[in-house]
Amino acid sequence: MCNKHRIGTWNIRSMLQLGKVQLLGEEITRLGVDICGLSEVRWDGQGHFTILDGHTIVYSERPTQGMSGVAVWIHRKIAGALVGYQPVSDRVLVVRLNVKPRNITLIQRQQPRMKKWRGSTKTCLKQLNMSPRGTCCSYRATSTPKSAEESHL
Image 1 (cartoon, helix red, strand yellow):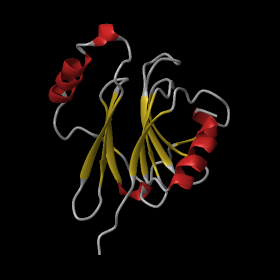
Image 2 (spheres, one colour):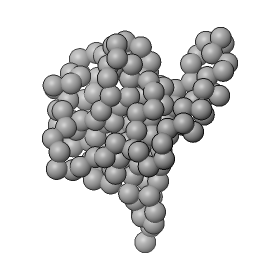
Image 3 (cartoon, rainbow, N blue to C red):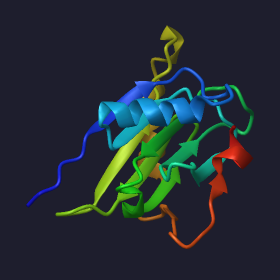
Image 4 (spheres, rainbow, N blue to C red):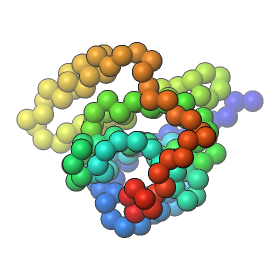
């Protein structure tokens, strides 16, 4: 029997407000989405953390808070399938999941809205092609990720 997973995307416009992670989790769970790519999260840095409900969020952002940024929200029932991730830039994040019948690679990308960024598609493709193959950050289930309270709430 094949398990089906619902995958979605959402331009969240900002995750800087207190309690926004919790509201996001409730809404995505209500919609029955298992994996959701998020744009414009506006967090600083890169990494991953598990929220209190057990869902995992992997994110990639500029070093300064408040600009662009992408993330992938993974439901707790498949969070253990996270094999690795590679923050390519503040607009591109690659996530690898070990699901049956084979591994899948998700690429979350944020397209700039301004017309002057017409070359961003080519830049994105160059970044993906230049990143070394198989260099996803390793993720270990035994590691202790930041809690949501420590990082973004």
